[in-house]
Amino acid sequence: MMVNQIARKAVRARLPQEIVAEIKKDAAWPADARRALQSTGGALGAKYLNKLGISAEYGPEIAFVTAVSRIAAGHVLLLRRLNLLIRKANVPPVRPGEKVKGNDDPKN
Image (cartoon, rainbow, N blue to C red):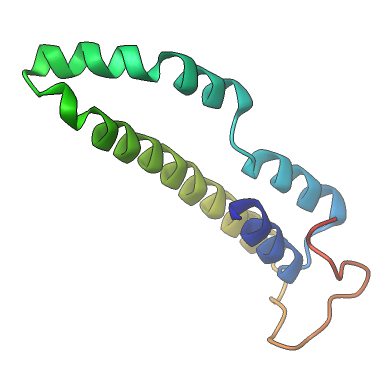
C-alpha cells in the first residue's frame, strides 16, 4: 500500500525510472526488522510491561501502537526525501488527468 503511494508520487514528479525503482525499494518495510519484531516482540514487550508495572493484558495494544508508529515514521521520512528530490529536480508535477510519457505504471 505505502510502496504504491510513494511510487505514484515519484512518477507524477517525473523522476527517472531508476530513481523510482530505488524509492520503491526504500519504501518496503525492512525484512530483518519485521522478523525481529515477530520473534522477540512478545517476550520483550512482557519484560518491559512488568518493569513499568503495567499489566500484561495491555501488551497487544502497546505492541500495536509501537509497530504502527514505526511504520508511519518511516513512511513520513520517505515522503520527505521524495519531496526533496522533487524540489531538487525542479520538475513541474503532473496535473490530474495528464499522462506521464514513458512511465505510465508506477507498479513497474
